Amino acid sequence: MNVLRPSALAAALACAVLCAAGCDPANTAASDEVTVVVQGDRRELELQEKSLRQREATLRDEQGRLDKRQLELDKVRAAADVEQRAQALQTQQEAMPKMEAPMHHKATAHHHKKAMKKEATPADGASQ
Image 1 (cartoon, rainbow, N blue to C red):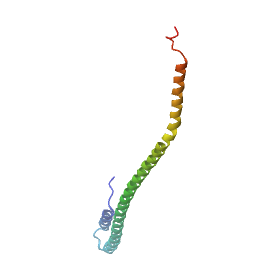
Image 2: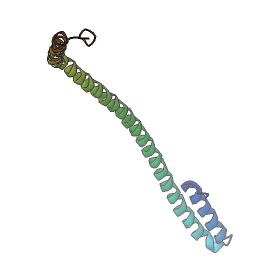
Image 3: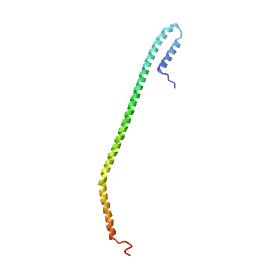
């Protein structure tokens, strides 16, 4: 779809009005009036177009700032996640000796019990 810019649209409208008015002297005053109106509309459209371009530039700049801020927040969030994991690992590491002591005691008792049992029962080959 071919879309005319506002300034091109105003120029095309002015040309069409002038062509329609023709060269008739009676239409010259009406033609001049239409030309003035079209020129005013054209200036207004140009101002609107300029304002729109400025607003687009402002929005692009703002989007760039927002993108940078999002990256900063993502980095902070990732750092916080790493810190939280590190703290969890530290807590687990600190709890390990407390958990290992009872396990070591049980293993030692089990080994001692096994050794006592082995001494109490004669070997299969010795009894025959």
